[in-house]
Length: 202
Image (cartoon, rainbow, N blue to C red; front, top):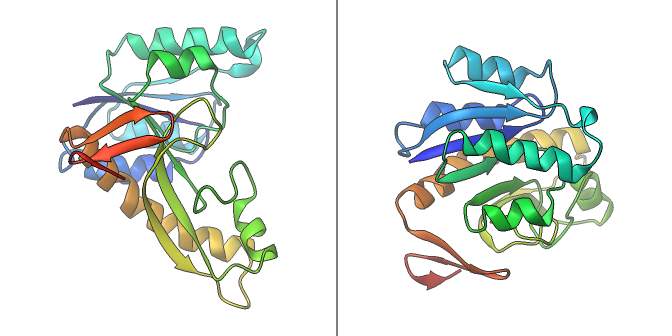
């Protein structure tokens, strides 16, 4: 199955997807970053994957950026659009165009802590558990149906940095697994709040 991966940074989740691509039946057609000089682009180049920089600062509006991003994506006719540390809020037009085909990984146990600084928020709240989840992207920021998650324990001496590192390890296991469910045709988005795996609501 053909996919396009969107990134904004170092691309460690991208690397885990590249490393597992054959096993999970994914052919990465292009990696697109909204920032130049990020290591994720080097990861793509080393794997001989076409890559593009689309600098959001060069566009007058979010809508104009997303329109050009859609143009780039459509050149590759992907079956799935994978957000792997893509730090942009997408427009409704973008989400509607690829509805049911966009996956994102988020470093918290949604619905807890959408947005940024999730690790510190979990520590400050005194949570015993933190983690990551993969969800379908819908109009609500980090609000689409959660497909799967991985938990980690928060130790008493935990810092945001050590917690982030623990969560990232789990992300690298979780994301390829969920992508594989999608490439196998097992995963479907029904509506803004509901998805199914093997025909069962999750």
